[in-house]
Amino acid sequence: MDEDCFAIPDNSSNANVASVASAAATAATANAAIDTCIFKSTHYDIANVIHIYLKDIHRYTENNTWEYLKTDATTKKQSWEIDVDNKELIFSIRTTVCNAFTARSLYWANAKDADDSDSNGYSKYLDTEIISVKLLNISSKLKDNKYICVVIKECKQFFI
Image (cartoon, rainbow, N blue to C red; front, side, top):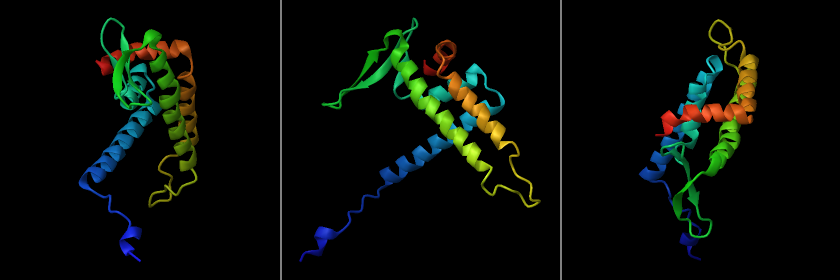
């Protein structure tokens, strides 16, 4: 019996390691941007988070025109399409960005249970429940049409 049939291929390469490191850095950047919104949840800060999550699939061209990267399901070809009435951008904000804020809120809600105490026995973050609630409030705001329209105006500067 040929043992090579059962050998596990070595898929580790520098490209895979680099992509994993890049994804971890992006996640850390995104979490840091979301955490900034805890203390100052300005439209600018929230637009920054939106940019971090959507910069590869949405872009602002000019004259209030947004485009999104459309991927054909069968051919896997990608092309930039005009986003009529910002429907795709609004959908992405309501799903991807809103889920990111919700996930970070859950992180902070669970941080209370973790052992995050310093050498004196004090918790590093005393108000994790308040932090979690603030992020959930931002997440719920990202479902409101008026709020999204205001944030989209602020997003333009990031997507140019």
